[in-house]
Length: 163
Image 1 (tube, rainbow, N blue to C red):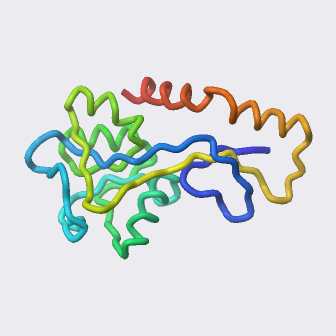
Image 2 (cartoon, helix red, strand yellow; image 1 turned 60 degrees about the horizontal axis):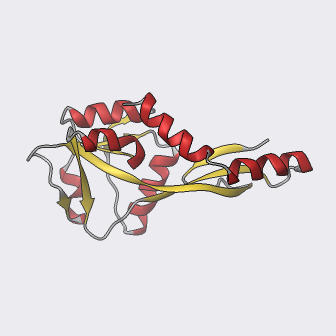
């Protein structure tokens, strides 16, 4: 059985990269939030983050950890849509996939914030247990998933589901 995971391939699994994108740091489009910040200023802001077990959160925390940085969330949620809504209301800086932020960025309800010297790429993988035997049919199905435009469709529908 294969699963879809975001962020990192869990220990004990093999993975095939399905697609890559990046995380966006977004806030209400007003002067209370800068368009760019320095690493040393991260603790000065309220952070709206996914729950600690999500791939989005793992990707974000991993980038910060490499730099010896850490932020404490003001709010944690299992919902990207909730984080986006809170950011639009000015409650803090949300960390969400850029594909989900695009409609609100385009309408200028939010703005994207950069952190000097940091980028937040992430990958989505199809994973399966190392011990799993993949039949020829399983292998063909995985190849089909990876070689079709399924991933673009998933991202487009996610944007439509969470406007």
